[in-house]
Length: 188
Image 1 (tube, helix red, strand yellow):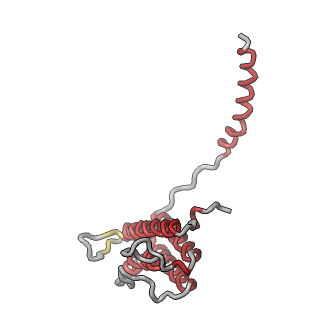
Image 2: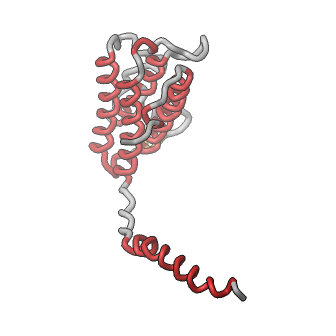
Image 3: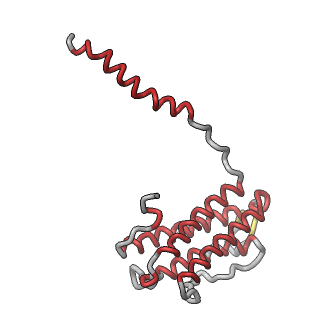
C-alpha cells in the first residue's frame, strides 16, 4: 500500500518527460515526395561519385601502389577502374562505345590532381548524361553486346552498384593501412 502513494507522482513524471518528445513528433514535417526516375538515378550516381572523389582526394599518394594480394589491383588502379567504368553508362547513353577498357588502371594519372580530376569528370559526365536523357530517355533500351537489351536506367544502376562494390574494396585498403575512410569519420 505504501508503494501506491508514489504511483501518481511517478506517472506524472513520465508524462511530463514524454510531453516534449510527443510535441516534436507532432511538428515533424511530412516526407518529401519520391523523386522521379531521373532524380532517383541521379541521387544514387552522385552519392557513389561523392564517395569515390573523397577517396581520391584523401588516400595518401605514397600508398597508391598498395594492394592486399598480388593478384589484386593497386589502390589507384582500383579507383581508376571504378570511376572509368562509369563510361559504360555515359558513352552508351550517348550512342558511343565505352572509352575505357575493363582493365583501365589509370597509368596516365600521375598526380593526385590528375586522379581527382579524372574521378570528378567521370561522375560529372555521367550525371550530365542522366539529366540530358531524362525520365523518357532513361527508359530507352540499349544493346551492350550482352544476351539481352537493357534499359538505360538499369545500366546506370548497374554501374552505381559496380562502383559501390569497388568502393567497399577500397575501404579495406584504408583499413589494411591503418587509415579510416572518409565516410567512417565523425561528421563535423
